[in-house]
Each structure stands twice: as structure tokens, then as C-alpha cells.
Image (cartoon, rainbow, N blue to C red; front, side):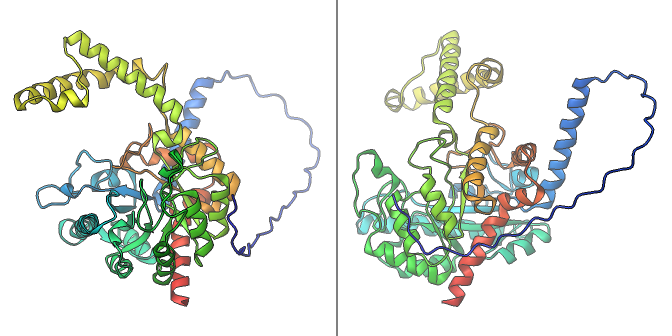
Length: 450
């Protein structure tokens, strides 16, 4: 597997060390009287001090998540992100967790490569673009603004507002019209992936690995042209869903840094949505960034499977104790309206009893994938490709989240874990947002030069 690309010059900063002269010998002082130290209390004090330091750092750095999915039903006059909806990201949760910037995603599920499929995909994309615009222009202009550059984002944060930025997940809505890339750019898109979980007209998907079934053996001719057009406009090329070969070709073709908006390290968890070391190194060589994703089954598939099995077993036990039968989807769909309503009420009762018992009965024997497991991926990638090329993403409202960072309100826990592992404030700032902003700046500088 080769990711050949012209290498970039790296600037190394020399570290200067100063040695203090030894102190003059002095007469030893008499020993201090012995005082017993409560080691448990000391540990508590140290942990509280670490958390407080993390809180201060968290307030100073720009906290940024590059991948937040949206449902347009939550972008209406009656129901929108000014409320604390049961979503993982909304304005109250961003406030509670100190999340400054959310990249809202214009995601389109892959469907047929024909006129009907393209038309539906385009309508879906426009619906999502317009929903984001309604949030910033109509529902909450005093709380959140749309940014298309890092400078705009910094200005908005300095004014005490939240920042919305836009990424496109799956270029399928382009249909066969490359001109739509500029249309999406004008609507605020600043990154785009060329496929999702099936092959698009532009690129093979990572899912082709399952059976070795490829449509283009990488990028199609239109996909290759799309890379050039994204470079021209200043849109970051997102490598999180295309195949390894499609990513190799995109890296080779791009004259600007590339990024992965939500991918973790395949060396730690071998799933096709994560990236091989060769891919990670190739992204870094372009000057790009990989945003580690807090998606439980991408972080640790086996651990998450054990946890799910334990939760299912507990749910079944509760259902049995209540005399209820859990149904599969087929049986559920066969219910009439009255039966479905009755079954939903039973499920609600089961879940109300389940939630308070998970921590005590499931976690001890089958712990959930948590923030520490997630930061293992961050550390691995930092060690491999350097602190300047790693960032964070939750994939919130798209299946993401790990125990301790299950929504935007818990974002401080990530900073706490990074600080616990010895990362400096400068490092934490880079990982949370500065690396991504740098890449966006460089991509836009290439576009300006072109």
C-alpha cells in the first residue's frame, strides 16, 4: 500500500535547556516533626486540582467538533436547537459543555445512481443546508453564527457566541454536475467526502472491503475532477468514508492538505471506517489532520459488543420479571396500532427500570467504551503522526459518543483525560481545534493562490 506524494518541508524548533548551578552546602536542619498524611485525601485533592486546571484550560481553548449529524425535524419554528432537545448537540448542551464550534453535517444516505436517486439526494442536501441557515439566521442569531473561515470562527467565539460550520458527508447530491460543488461552497460547506457507506458516482466506499466489490477501483473520473475543484474553491477533502484506494488517489491528486472528519486508528481497532497507519502518515504528509472519532464500535468493537450483550441480558431479565415479551422488528411491525401503542408503553417501563441498574449491574463486569479508550486512539495517532495532525470528533447524533462523552455537555471530560495524560495546554488547544483551523487556513490559501 503506497501513498506517494511530494513531501512537504518540516520546520523543527530547537529545544534549549538551561542548567542551574548547584547550591552551596549548608548545615542540615533538624528533622520536621512527623505528621501522618491521609493518602486518600491527598489523592482527592490532587484530582480536584487537576479537574479545576482542566476547567480553566477548557474555557481558554476553542472546543470544536468536526462531525455533528442533524435531523431537519429539529430545525423548525416549533422545535429547534434553542431548546435542550433529546439530541447530543444543541445550544444548551454546547453551553453546558463549553463546546464552541459544531460542524453540522449535510449527510445524504447513498441510493441509486440514477436521475431519481440524484434528485432525492439533492433535495435532502438543500433541506439540511437551509435548516442550518434557519438556525443561525432566524431561530438563534443572538446565540450562534455561521463561519466559513477560522478568522470568522474566532471572532464569533470572542463575541461570546457559538459557531456553526458546515461539512458535507457524501458528495452523492452533486449528481453529475460538478458545478454544484461551488453551490455547496456558497452555502457554507468547507469540507466534503466523496462517498459514504456505499459506492457513489465519484468514489468507492470503505464498505467494498467486505466482499472486494468495487465500482471504480478508487475514484471515478468525476471524482478526480471533484478533487481539483475542491482544491480550487478551498473545500477540505474528507477521507473518512471512501476506500483506502480512493483515499490514496485523492491524496496523490490534491495540492492542498486533506483531512478525515471522523476516523480513528485501525491499528487499535480493525474496522474499515478506521485508518491504517499508512493512511494516517499520508494525511500528515500533506499537512492534514485526522479527527479521532468517539464512536464506540470504532474505538473498541469487542468491548462494546460485551457491554451490549450484558445490557440486552439485563433488559430481557427485567422484561421477564414484568411478564412482557420483547419482540424483534418483524413481530413489532406486524402489530396493529393498538398493539404497537401497548408494546411501546411496555418498552418505556422496561427502560425506566433498566437505566438505573446499568451502572451497578453491567459496568462492573462489562464496562462501556469510555473516554479513556477514546483517548488511547488520540495518543496512538499523536505518537505516530505528531501533535499537529490529530483532532477530535464525536459523530454525535449519528451514532457516536463514548461513556463520559455522550453529548456536547460532557466535553470537559475529554480535556480532563488529555490533561491527566500529560498533554500541555498548547497540545490540548491543538487537538481540540487549532489543528483543524490550521488545515482550513492552508486549504483556503492554496485556493487563493490558484
